[in-house]
Every structure is written in structure tokens, then in C-alpha cells.
Amino acid sequence: MTFENLAAQYIAVWNETDADRRRAAIDALWAADGRYVDPVAAATGRAEIDATIGAVQQQFAGMSFRLNGPVDGHHDQARFGWQLGPAGAEDLIEGFDVIERDADGRLIHVLGFLDKVPSA
Image (cartoon, rainbow, N blue to C red; front, side, top):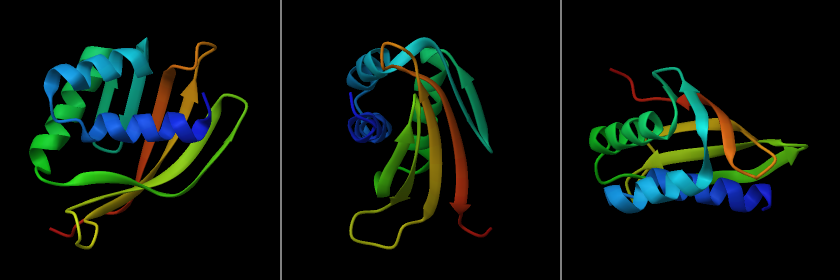
């Protein structure tokens, strides 16, 4: 799988609001012991990753993630920018993620960074 496809599937998981379909996509995309870390969350394993994504969807209901720019990768790691916001309006949050895949092409580690966040 190309890094572009991997990043697209990763973003699609963050946008999947059906809990059963989201969990099935996580099971297909992530290694069983995968880890996700960003400034406000840390999750290890598919169940915790699923719960983290579900919580973000509740907090930002009606918004969706989009890739922002090209996916840049080498060896088994890649980075890409993303945006979160309502359709047709200015994005609320922007950031970038660094992903690492295992020999089977599944995500084993994601490091998330926030570049633009709403002010309090």
C-alpha cells in the first residue's frame, strides 16, 4: 500500500461515524498494539484508538478531516498535513501527523501535532 493510500484510509477512519464500520476499519488499518499520541490524547491498542476517535467526533460533531497537501514518506514512515472543520467553511484545526507502519503495512505508531487550534 502506498503512503498516499495509507494516509487516505487513516483520514477516512477519523471521519467514519458509524461505530461498527469505524471499528472494522481500525482493525484493518492498525496493528493490534498500535499507538496514537497527540498533545491531548494517548491511546494504545485498537479499542483505545477507537474510543479516542469517537470522543473527537463527539467534540467536533458535524466536522470532518481532510488531507492538507502531499504525503511525504520514506522507509516505513510518512508525514502529512490535515485540516478539521465544517464543510464549506474555514477549518477550525490544522495539524500534521507522522505515521509508522509495520511489515504488514498496518499502522504501529502515529504522532499527531497541532498547528492551528481555536482560541479559548
